[in-house]
Length: 460
Ligand SMILES: Cc1cc2nc3c(=O)[nH]c(=O)nc-3n(C[C@H](O)[C@H](O)[C@H](O)COP(=O)(O)OP(=O)(O)OC[C@H]3O[C@@H](n4cnc5c(N)ncnc54)[C@H](O)[C@@H]3O)c2cc1C
Ligand SMILES: NC(=O)c1ccc[n+]([C@@H]2O[C@H](COP(=O)([O-])OP(=O)(O)OC[C@H]3O[C@@H](n4cnc5c(N)ncnc54)[C@H](O)[C@@H]3O)[C@@H](O)[C@H]2O)c1
Image 1 (cartoon, protein in one colour):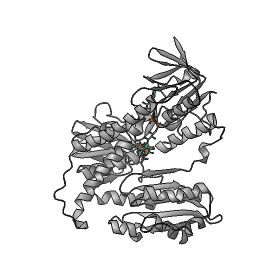
Image 2 (image 1 turned 30 degrees about the vertical axis):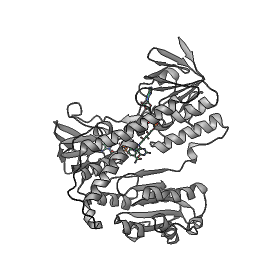
Image 3 (image 1 turned 90 degrees about the horizontal axis):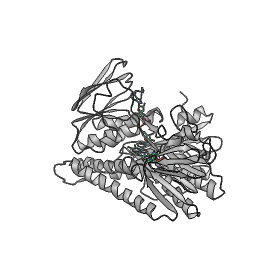
């Protein structure tokens, strides 16, 4: 029998649960469907567990530096099983909170199982068939399984498998030098593994200006991480405990051997098994659902939010999609994806906080660019903490004196950057920030100073 709802939400990741709550509060009868763990990637296998592991790695690293701070800490030993236990505990408590939250939502019924469209208004979950005029997709994504020769026979880990490790790999080889690859690279190096990163691009982090990417490479190399770039035509060889990544077209040809292999070469949307063709929902060639500026798909009455729409790949962009849909559907407020300013952090230590355009992008967009730079060696807070690696950089439009973007690679950079992000949202000239009085001694206190010391960008 078909059960009738006013609204169905598919996926209980970052956007689904808050939207289900709002829809329920509006008086609608709501179904929310989750095939695995509520909380989705971030809570179970993404941000929360990785940042918990990053925290353990930071303690291990700083304990090793204790003498520099006048502290005797003894021999540092990482107990991988305890790291795993702590991480799982944090993640499970977070999932438990989401479970309780959903269970307490008025008018919302949780279905467990895999949802597939039968028509534009009907979904099946096992034996349950449900129908609604409003359907909201929040199905997220998963690690890409690249068609590398050897992938069927060589054991490898993805972001889920690597978090299940309860013993330290002797030598972790990571293919992919972006967010996932670099966060795991540094944390496992700090736990005590040898780590090699193998990246196809000529340089790591092509989304960053070259000197910022170079500074990240410098930070990682100082800790003993080996980085191979230009690794074209990857093939996998070996067996359990003895893996080998071959970059056959690299010049010279590369062979990188290790005990464990992590593949971190991007993600793909969970849209291939959703029956989208039965609903007529259009996707691009990679499976991302086409949406307009307000998350509406090609079919009236169906919306797509979060990683599955390809408009963002972060928890904060997924949550913002929820806010946009709720505003449009429930509040008569025409909020849009295009109002969002690009922002993210790379959670290595020190972290890299990024907003808006980088210098290269700003110039390509035709701006007359001014930049301000300050190395973290000239930031009092960083000096006091003994954590002076990195740099801060602001990018300003010379004509309007408005911020175009900024990066803080340095201690607390992931937090301090928000002071500039809010100035960008407020759309004010930089003088508002240069006249602001910030707390001493913080990283953010130097942002007005950097903005007072601008110079034309090197057009070299
Ligand atoms: C290792 C790692 C670290 C990360 N760290 C960060 C970070 O520090 N900061 C950050 O902003 N982002 C981070 N991300 C990205 C972030 O996790 C994602 O952008 C975010 O979780 C996306 O949320 P979502 O709601 O779109 O999808 P998801 O959280 O993936 O949720 C989708 C849900 O839908 C369910 N589902 C899928 N198909 C169906 C179906 N057919 N029927 C029923 N249910 C279905 C899934 O089981 C899942 O629970 C990280 C990702 C990874 C992998
Ligand atoms: N700090 C954060 O916010 C955070 C942390 C982790 C993950 N995430 C999210 O997860 C997503 C996935 O992260 P990711 O690092 O797996 O993907 P990514 O798409 O950011 O990077 C993939 C990397 O793998 C490289 N690559 C691709 N194919 C390759 C090949 N054949 N051989 C060698 N290298 C290859 C790419 O050049 C790139 O550097 C990101 O888009 C991000 O949004 C975010």
